[in-house]
Length: 205
Figure (cartoon, rainbow, N blue to C red):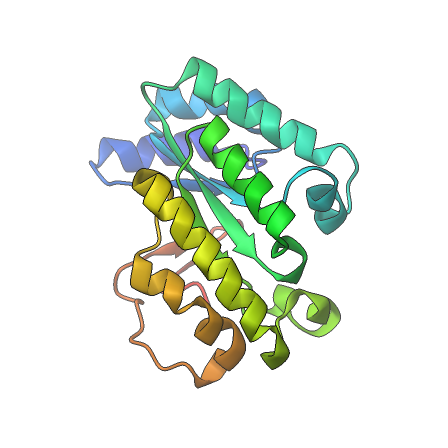
């Protein structure tokens, strides 16, 4: 959202009939979203790292979560019939407590935002080295299995608000514990990743 030419980028893509979504932390959403909607933006995903003070601690900025919620509320109020939004919730050790999981689910329901469960990664540089406290360990498996059962309860309650499939949710403990030992097909031919510096690549990691 800080890129000065973002509305022109959106218009360029929309004029060519391509689908797109913008991923944002939503801090500047309230101030910047209107020209983007006018240019043709119709889908927004919000990186979601916790609720309240937990979010502020993760991003190391006080009052940041308040701005995030204000931005989401603004889009819901002004562009609810035009723009779809979903939450890319990062499941990491600090967000895996039952209380935070329930608060995240309440937030998703409050703003009618489908929740996609993203997992803390074992190779992306901003999730490793200095950030080891974000990772899970083998002894966390029972806790993760209970958490998955809670997420499955949410999906049964509101299937439209949990994006992940049931098998995908049940695989979460394996993803988080096995890490690079997981063997799955690559999705590099399904996505084009455009970075904030304008770089383009076929895969995000």
